[in-house]
Length: 324
Image (cartoon, rainbow, N blue to C red):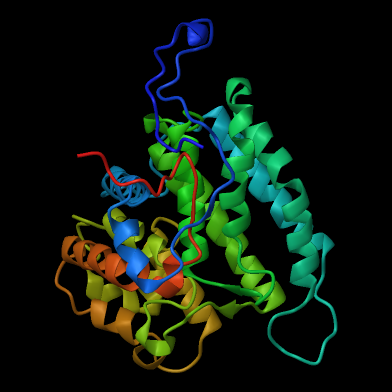
């Protein structure tokens, strides 16, 4: 099964709308089964495409508020409708009474519904000529909402959602002009959905480093959120530990939205429950925070075997090495 991409120049494709690349779609599977395989991941086309996607969006949101003007395409609207459906299913699947406080088993009922419907949901988002990509892309959506066996959620699941969005870009369903809407609409709605899942079903943090990790569940919104704040005339990193500032500005900035959620969920001094973030508040500028978080994301998430062993590779995010 070929996993490489060929430019579409063949004659039988001339009657179709032009597509940037042709793919032999496949069901993504795990490829990183041992620590020595990590080199294969870092050299892969998937790693290059994934990091390129994260950094392109990071550049796109630089200095921009949630409330700035941007276009919302039909695909973005359809994605928001998918996330709204998943949200509605939470309301229809209340937690069950059980002895254990954490990991409510009703999550498995919710997840089973997604498992069953994911392909149909994604088919509805894709343009007609790309419906054949649905089985491949749907896998990333199913991986993005947590693990139904362990009832946990962490940065590896968040990475699967970014991979899902990256795949939608690769097949041309999302475009360059959707950049701001991808973060401000789709990713923000995804975050709200994950917070609702975490609260409703008391999901455990996957592979959490406790107070030494950045956050129990997320990482990307801190990267993109810090980029939003670059060159801000008054807000400096030292301000985000002040509750007054967070309450005033959280509707404009993803970073502060995340801090607000932490403040709601955790008790005690901020320096104790979120030590890494507390340290970040001492960094002099948002651009330095942003650069530091990108380095930390690579080291703490993308270069950690326990996270990447679960990542799945297909034709869109390929394990094949980057072509020289």
